[in-house]
Length: 248
Image (cartoon, rainbow, N blue to C red; front, side, top):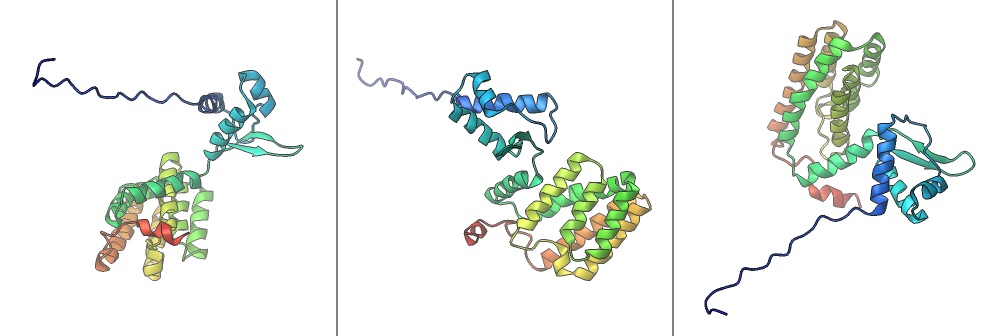
């Protein structure tokens, strides 16, 4: 071997992990549920039928079903009337993951308000354009009978948008707000002002005025931002890491 010449270091290459059989089965069952348009309440094949059809062990089937159950895509009921039933995943399941992601990303209150200003005025405008009479009545009922429920108002307003993506985005956001230790909603800080803002948004929705609805919501959020700025809270973490320790 020639002196002074170093041999290149042999780097160890990592190959992608092959999915477990249970994960492959979960993928197959998920594809069947979604690809065939199965609805909440529809039944999947029984555990015994899945074992026979796919030629896998009982433990593999049960692990695959646990994966789908953790996603909220199925519900396993025991007893004579039991079975493996399709269900619609709830926002709370996604919302919990969002809360974890927000914590690890160290998202600040300032970023939260900026995000709300991007989507909630549009949700209000969409509500003014598309809300049904029944939805407008529910929004009015919320404003009149639940004046202290700031998060409830925003969630009902998002429902009135009749846009599934907007509705999910706002609902997940407010799931995070309800989990926040900071109480980041205007109602608790300025109840009279928040209630006035809600009535202004409600009036615009009832009058089917999208521009006014968006402006009213933006005003509501800007006022909230100013209040938090006065309190020196805009650069706080939205959900600080030590909050999780306080829950145990």
